[in-house]
Length: 178
Image 1 (cartoon, rainbow, N blue to C red):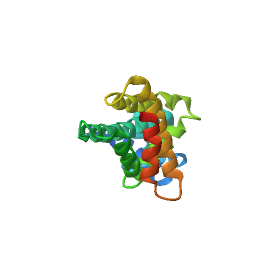
Image 2 (spheres, rainbow, N blue to C red):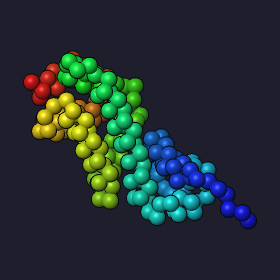
Image 3 (spheres, rainbow, N blue to C red):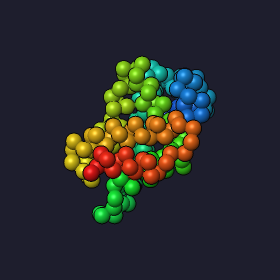
């Protein structure tokens, strides 16, 4: 039997893992569910990812890279004289609203690192990239504090029953950034 040439199989498996987690949660991801979603044999998932942690690590990196790209695009689009408090509050509202599913997925993967030490490096890379983007707007120490606050505000916005209040978020961010 001839071997099927499939140069993008690994990427499809990662994308399938992201979709499974996004739709059903972290606990739903197995090699088997990823293989079924990617429409590949089970052996392909275990060939490319020896452990579930390896597959989760790849999924976390994929989601983090997408979110950081969105963040960098947002930061580049800001006018030089933009009010950072106002703009960041709007960005939190956008991520908790229009991009809610992606944001929930990112936090679910981020939270997965609490019990899986092998995932911690991939999860903390999000914080490092976020801080680097903020350093383009403020000093390094403020950027670090802003990263922590931004993550907390977004997490609160995602778990709260109502829509985040732009004015309230802006007020909190303004306190840190003044």
